[in-house]
Length: 331
Ligand code: TRP
Image (cartoon, rainbow, N blue to C red):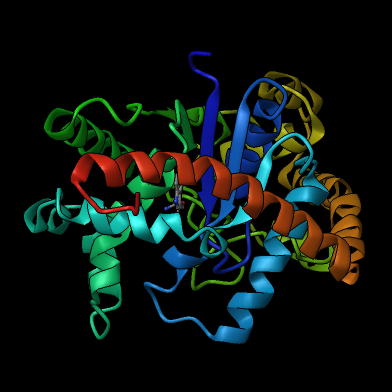
């Protein structure tokens, strides 16, 4: 079938924010009924910056539990941990020989991360896009739902696929990025001109999916607003526009409906209402995540089954790749 394989992954580093929820998890949810989806915990990408081992392991499980709690159904899609499927590293190695150092040095995220982690510019950091290409290409992926910041990586995956196919003959499907809609982009509560990030240094800038009710309410109370008092969507009101977007996303309304609802009301009433709505929406997810994390046997079983399914699909592609490049594979 054409156009039916979806691949995406998230790094289990840092807590996910409501921006990740609206921007990625929710979109994954919509796709799981229509496509054959592979969703991974990209722990191999995570170690390109320093990680505490115990924390990395814990966050990997937390992330898996969170996905399931949000409604990702492990019966419908393949939910797995990247490092449990060895073909990712194996394909990455082959693709490395088709990728130029110069093109990796020019990647925006590499330059940003190299500047941020100047004391740890390791080979993995530079190779990050090739591992991501391996992730995607292993599954003959059609669509890669990603945020705007990852489109350059998907572009490189396409280039590498085309390059391989040209040199060795048709092997990989050339994937397409599916960029999340601009409207659902959620900004920092402290600096609404920038994206809400899970690694923001200001703890009030991001609302995490694991934040408790009081923390959520406090962060929204402290959210930066704009001059004036009107609650409407406007380029001149990035703070209020961001809060309206968040409110609408979590209340299941359009931003127009949200504007009408708060017409004539002040910021003092609006900000707590946004906080309450987000806290109410997250409460059942948090409860379910907690329940799943307490049931390690179930969670381990789900991830083992996911890895097994991913392994089978990945093995097919890798074996083809090994044959094409001339690797001896026994008789
Ligand atoms: N680099 C992605 C991010 O940080 C995570 C990722 C790893 C990914 N492998 C992927 C996303 C493959 C899409 C497809 O957001």
